[in-house]
Structures are given as structure tokens and as C-alpha cells.
Image (tube, rainbow, N blue to C red; front, side, top):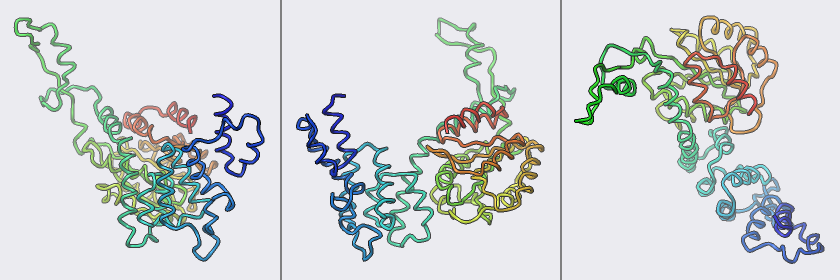
Length: 399
């Protein structure tokens, strides 16, 4: 990168207030911003600059009273410019800063604003947190915005989750019971190669091999329970958990249950047919009684050795901590695969009760944050009963 380009970038970073200082620098004449860069500068100035240099505060800004902030049409045009000028990840950062710095959260419920926002986990979490305040005229727009997020996560996870469950359920066991859907074509072909008939260009197998599908019967199905903390800090985890639950619930090989808790416990399993409906069933915010929720989930464990119990929480327990630890230890000792996820998040280290996490880990229960793209691999290893120690170290190292 040459000096002129470097100066342009610094000018964009520092904003219009630095223009005077740049003009005194030798060689700045050849480093003036292009027309497109000037548009970028103006878009960034709207939220990062002071009133004197084109910031939204120039129109009074949020928090200055009297509803003198920027109008909806101004915000809509600005959002359109930002999405045109910057790449997607940067758009999300700028949108988030606009909400915080300029007090634009009250505009989130405006349909024309929502239609121009780039789908973003943080904004989706905010909308879910404020869902009881959504005016009737904006409900459809809010739902459409949440649907965009859900569709993105579904594209990220669904195929890998299905492959993980199929791989875990297929133990490479073979059955004498013939079934076209259960045929092991690879092994049948490999064992039949010696019977290749060149005159007809075909393999004539002496024996056909079939996978054992007994794991699909009700008695042998795995049960997956997601016990999800709906306190305010868990917004992103709630969204990923909801989509994951709906994918799992659609698979005949699994029995899936999702439970939400604060100081109360709500069973949301019946909403698993639609991830958006499921999300709106959560009530973000409030206290936390993890012990109570685990006690509720215990009654759905019929076959401990085939049960996966995911506790998804920041572990800020407001209930009986000693009782919670006893319950978790008892579940593990009974044969249940217990996994504590401190967060399911794209970036950043989760906020959680480190002391409680340490005590749970001391029980031999994996306790870590997990990036969403690693969920399928985690699920597969857990279904196969594999040791998660290495996975936990990898996940903790990347979080």
C-alpha cells in the first residue's frame, strides 16, 4: 500500500474533523478522497462525528429531547448508503454503533427501517428482548427480520447437523433384514467386485449387506434435551438453540425437547415446528433458577445411556447452587451425557460465572463456549459417546 492510499485510509478513520491537519501534510494533495470515499466519509460521519461535522447529533440526536433526532426517511437513506458502500460484516458493526451511539433503538420498530437493516444477531437479540413493546403495525416487519436470521443459521447448520446425526446413528453394523433404504451399497460393491461380469459390464453380488436400523425404533432413539437460559445475556445462544432444536425435532432418529427458564420453566417443545414461533416463545430477561429447570427436565429421561442433556447458560444461578450441582452429578452418574454450553456465539468471550463453571467441570462435565459452526461436530461426538476433552480444548481455545 502506497503512502497516498495509507493517508486516505487514515483520513476516513479520523473523519472530517481531521481534514485541516491533513491539508498541512506534504503530499496530501494526491491523496484526496475519491467521490466514493467521500460518500463513505459522509455515511460514517453520521454516527461517528460531532454535530458540527455532519453527525446525526446535528439534527438534535436521540437523547436531546423533543423528538428532534433524524427522521425516518433520513435513517432509511443512510442505511441504504451504508449497505451499498461497505461489505456485509462492516455494515453490521456500523448498524450496531448507530443504535448505541445515536440512540436509534426506538426506530427499530419502524417497518421502513427494519426493511433496510442488514440481518444481524445483535439486533435480532435486541428485538427479542423488546418483543413485548413491538407495536402491532410492526409485528410483520419484525418477524420478517427474525426470519432472515433464522434462514442464515439454518443454511449454516442444517446439512451438517443431519449428517452428524446420520453418522452417529450408523455404527457400521449390518443386519440380515433386507431393506432397500438400509442397503450398504459401498460394502456390497466392494465385496462383489470379484464377481464382475465384463460381458454385461455389471457386478453380480453373491451377498447384499444392509445396515442395522434398529437405532431408529422408539426404544433405541436418542433423546436430546436443550435446557436454555433465557436471561438477557443469552440472546444469541437462544437464537442458535432454537434453530438447532427445530432441525433436530424434524429428525425421526431423535426425540428432541427444548426447555426455557429464568425463575420459571417453560416447555417450548410444541413450538419446534417453526423456529420463529419458537423464538417468540422465549422471554429474554429476568432472574435465573437453573436447578428448577434441571429438575423439570429429569422427568423426560427414560433411557439415560441414550440421553444428551445440553445446559445452555451463563451459570449465574439464583437458585440452589448445591442442589444444582448434585442434580448434574446424579445425571452424569446415571449415564446421561451432560454438556454445559456457556454460550453459542460467533465472536467474543462469553460472560459467565467462572466459579460455577469450574465446579461443574470438576464433576467431569464438559463446560465451554461453542462456536455455532462447531455444533454439528459436537453433536456427533456426543451421540457416539466419545470423549469430549479434546473438543472442549479446541472450542475453548477458539472462543
